[in-house]
Amino acid sequence: MINPLNAAAAYATTAAKTTGPGMAARDGASFGDVLEQAAKESIGTMKKSEDMSALAAVGKADLSDVVQAVTNAEVTLQTVTAVRDKVLNAYQEILRMPM
Image (tube, rainbow, N blue to C red):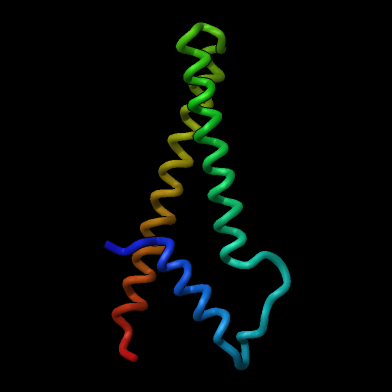
C-alpha cells in the first residue's frame, strides 16, 4: 500500500531538485501549503460536526445546526477521499514511468 506522506515527501524532494525553463519558483502558496491548509480546514469541519453531534445527544443543540454540521462533514470527507485517490493515482502513474 502506498503511504500518502511518502508520496508528498517524494514530490517535495523532486520539486526542490528541478531547475530549468518553466521550473522557477512561483509567488504564492506552494502545493504543500495548499494541501496543509485544506487538511486543517477539513479537520476543523469534522471536529465541529462531532461537537454538534455531542451537543445534540444531550439536547443542547438545534436540530438544523446539527444536520448542517453533519452534512458539511460528509461533503468534506467525500472531498478528502477524492483528493487522496487522485494523489495516489498520480503517484502510481509516476512510479510506472520509465526512467
